[in-house]
Amino acid sequence: MLKELIVKNRSYRRFYQQERIDYRTLKELVDLARLSPSSANLQPLKYILSWKEERNALIFPCLKWAGYLKDWDGPEEGERPAGYIIILGDREISQSFAYDCGICAQTILLGAVEKGWGGCIIGSIERDALRRALDIPSRYEILLVLALGKPKEEVRLVESKGEIRYWRDEKGVHYVPKRGLEEIILNISQFIS
Image 1 (cartoon, rainbow, N blue to C red):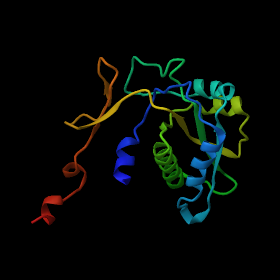
Image 2 (tube, rainbow, N blue to C red; image 1 turned 135 degrees about the horizontal axis):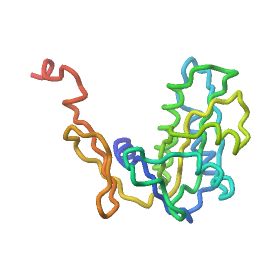
Image 3 (cartoon, helix red, strand yellow; image 1 turned 90 degrees about the vertical axis):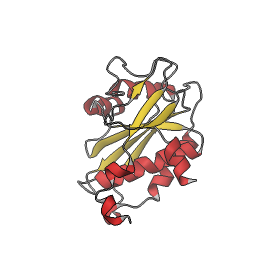
């Protein structure tokens, strides 16, 4: 069951924008992150939830989408996320957020997939613009933005043949190459007999 969730949890970048996500769902997803492990149990992460179109419209232009797809500027109107979760690090609690941030982002997206949603972890953010747009106090470091919605695209995993850049075919199917286990587990041949 967990492997199915992980395989289904892809970086979706096109959504059925009219399929609205609500506050309760976003809150439930953050609650999963809240229950996740935290380095030294400091729990320094804070979250901004966005599910209303007006606020989503402030967030969208601050994000950059799909760096390998050079001829694509991101989802068009009608294919944009229905909601966002912005992950912040509270500098008054800690100066280091790397482990917590990754754990919580993945936990939220796995929870979203389990509920029939999909998402994309976005780290390419115009942070100053987002801070101004949402009036985020300076004590909070903007770490990641999770874009969420009902996926409108098909994403397929394929075996990497030395190339790791994702691509889309002429039908818009999104392909994501993954390295094989033999490539990522070092010294595997020494221990298998």
